[in-house]
Image (cartoon, rainbow, N blue to C red):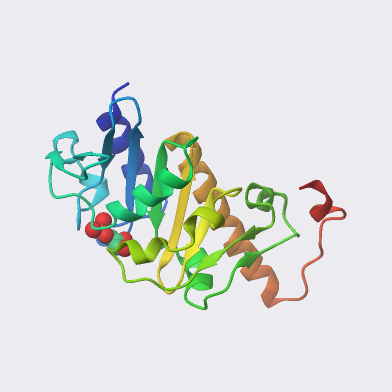
Length: 200
Ligand code: 13P
C-alpha cells in the first residue's frame, strides 16, 4: 500500500471539493501495522502537495520521521484513531455548512434526508477546545463511537472512516446534504422521512 500516494491524491480531492485549503483542514492515514501516521503538513496548500511533503510520524511517540512539519492538529487525529480502532483515515475540515453549526455550538440533526443515515440523524458538537491541543478532542470517544462525524465547537468538523475513500465520500456527502438542508429551511419546514428514527 502506497500511503503517501493515497494521501496526496485524496488531499488534492479534498481541496477540489472545498473541504480543505492552504490554511484550513488536514488529512491523515494510519498504518496500524507499522505504527505510522501519514498526515498533511501544516499551513500547506493541498492542491500542490508532493509525496515528499507528507509528514510521517511514529503514532505512539508522536516523533516526526520525515516530510515537512506535521499538521498542528495531529493530536486531534490521534485522539480519533484511539477512539475508533476500526478506522484508518481522518479528515479535519472547516467546510462551510457543517462548520456553521459548530460555530453555533449546535448538533446537526436531520431526519428529512436519507444521507443523514450515515450519522444516524445526528452529528454531535463538542465544546470548544484550543486548536492544536488535545483539549479540542475532549468528548470525542463518545461522539464518534457510533458515528463517523462530529463537530468541533467554534471550529469545524472531523470525519473518521475505515478508508480515506470512504472518509472523503462521507464528509463530502454530509457537507452537501447540510447545505441542502439549510437551503430548504429558508423556504419552510422540513418534512421528516417516515420511520427515520426507528431504523437505528
Ligand atoms: P494545519 O495547517 O496545521 O494542518 O491546521 C489547519 C487547521 O485546520 C487548524 O485547525
